[in-house]
Amino acid sequence: MKKNWQRYIQRIIVSLIGLTAIGLLVGSLSWTLVIGLAAYLTWTLTQAIKLHQWLYSPNTKSTPPESHGLWGDLFDGIHTLQKDHNNVQDRLRTMINRVQESANALNDAVIMTDARGAMEWWNKSATTYLGFMPRSDHGQPIYNLIRTPAFKSYFEQKNYDDPIELSSPAKPHIMLRFRITLFGEDDRLIIAQDITRVHNLEQMRKDFVSNVSHELRTPLTVISGYLETLSGNADTLPPIWSRALNTMSQQAGRMELLISDLLLLAKFETIDQSQARQAVNINRLLKSIKSDALVLSGNQAHNIHLTTNTDSLLMGDENQLRSAFSNIIFNAVKYTPAEGNIDIHWWSDDKGVHLSVKDTGVGFDPIHIPRLTERFYRADPSRHKDTGGSGLGLAIVKHVLRNHDGELEVKSSLGLGSEFICHFPSRSH
Image (cartoon, rainbow, N blue to C red; front, side):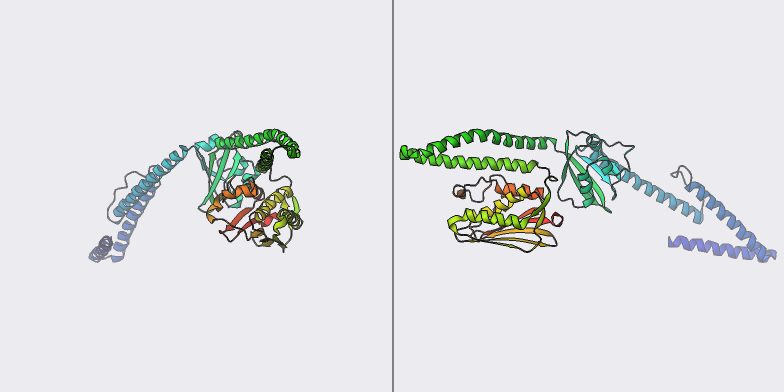
């Protein structure tokens, strides 16, 4: 390239020297230089017009104009850049088409929007599941097409750790799970997965548990009634029958507790979170639960301490909160040896309000913590017979906290006691 420029400069210098020599020979140096420069300017303008016509012609891939020297190299260089640019465009177009084809082959709906929610692109499954129209819906805000306040709130919050499940606006019988990922300048990639089958199976499970629990309650009530009648006449029965009646009465009581917890859990799973929201006086609620815990402790004489150092009002369902808090506190009583300490602490900070229940009980291996809120899961199955619980208490706690946008944190070590902490966001109080 440097050699080319040197050659062009040499040609200009040689031309000027030639024009000067001719001008001296003919005796008119000025006019000779003017005529030479005018000829060069005319040739240059002609080449510029050729360049303009070529660049703005309908077919920019046409052969470049014929020329030589500086303009010839310029035409060839621009033509080379055009070919490289077109090749890159072809590769990018092929890649985009391939990505779109692969996205269209997905069974999940895929939607791309800008930061304001304007729809830029979606695949065929989005048209099927959500009813988007390829022509009229392009550029429309997505929350104008998915007209659910929960979706708009989820879209705008920018916290997409957990998905949201909603019915399809085009086909209400289809249940979709939405996940959103941020990319670029707050643009969104939305993926909607059809979970109708899983949702229906979960609903069948809930209905089955609820129906079976209801159906078992009546015969169990009858059995318990007859057992109570027989136990009243245990003095007239042989000792072996008395022991059998006591055992059956205990097991019937445990079954009644299990059925009650199953019905309560089914209720909390299906309850509308927006219902029964009111200001709950947590201070008064905890004092009431503490009194019940002291009764449960009985002769074991546990030292139960309650401290509250914040506003005791919490927006929620008092019955649900009572069930969750009492489950945690009563568990502390059950698993703490006699005369042990149980500390109940209610406080607030910049993250929200919190309830801590800490005991000096037997504790358990932290390996069990991820599964503690599963139905019927027990960190120590051998304690089942001693405590007589249903195994559903922490599952109930989990659903109550979920209904109040809260989280459960558990800390424990073998022989060093346990601590259960309920975290509620700032907007809850």
